[in-house]
Length: 157
Image 1 (cartoon, rainbow, N blue to C red):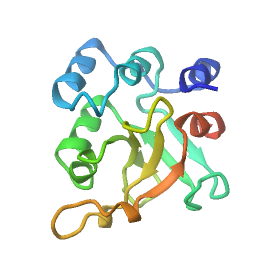
Image 2: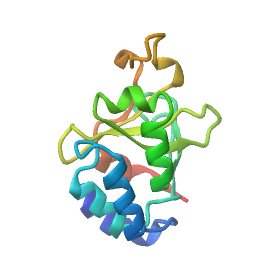
Image 3: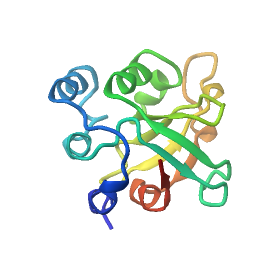
Image 4: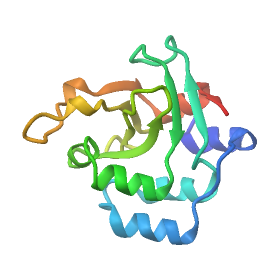
């Protein structure tokens, strides 16, 4: 099932808000087009993802750590991707920040926007960036191989 089909099915469970047209313009202006495919931007305009909380148990999370993630606002996506580490280092490799950890680590969640129409979802620890400010991809924690799978099985609050 596609990301959009799952979001359509679970739309009434989403507790967040839609992005505004101004926020969509800000995302397009501030982020590289390769980081924000138009279909992904359209999801943000169609489904109330911003500020929705998603949870996975340790068993459901491919990294084995469990997930407590709040979907970022467009301003936070821009800031985390372009003004902070690990986002700056991750963006050059095709990662877009979409979530913040509510479990205490503060490690942001990203989708790999260059991974097709069903994006890889990862958590990137702050210490995954080395002294030269490069992302050490072997330290990236894969949460779900597909965003659709994550959205399908996550508990929403």
